[in-house]
Length: 241
Ligand code: SAM
Image (cartoon, rainbow, N blue to C red):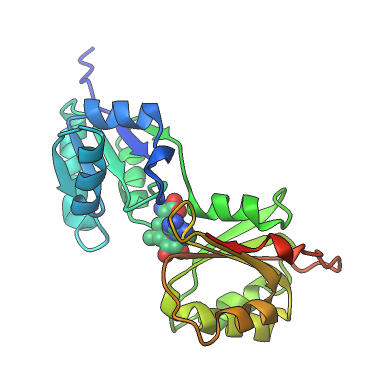
């Protein structure tokens, strides 16, 4: 039987801010693979340089994923292993790695996760809202389908997790308030970074907190699911670093 050796596709999680969150295994894999497919090669280069790794980088992002996927698949099928990393966190979570994973599976290429930080999970666990059942919604659509998506969440009883950009934070709070009501929630900003901030309260309270401020950084919103029990937050544990 002529068995051709294929490489493996490693999904390597990288820090969402604090470089100490990188795992030993992630660094070893990033050192050992033949090529690292990175969403933002400059950002990944900074990470690699910090840890003394000088490996080959290929850009792999939303705008070139269709052209780059066959190239990476060819590498993998010729026996070379590839690591895929996103800007930050776990590849495939609100970033283009999914496309490459699906194609690799279709071609019988082993896909190996190297787990680590995910902003959604860091936010959920610190939110104080139920963690036993949750729904990750990623980014809401900016225009078309936005209201429909929020309405579809109205009856959802599991804790809701959303990603949001700073300039849409207040709009998202307003849109969620209109459809979901004034629920308890947590806004988690710049997790693991210098200006980390976790604010817990109702949607109205957090809207007031962020209104009139310069809103900067990266955000995860964690919102209580639709259940009668209103989580009582001890808001004195809210903080900004
Ligand atoms: N793959 C990443 C992960 O595992 O979390 C997510 C990538 S997605 C393109 C980027 C979004 O994740 C940001 O807009 C923000 O909503 C969230 N995010 C990433 N890093 C964060 C951080 N340090 N604090 C809060 N939110 C963060």
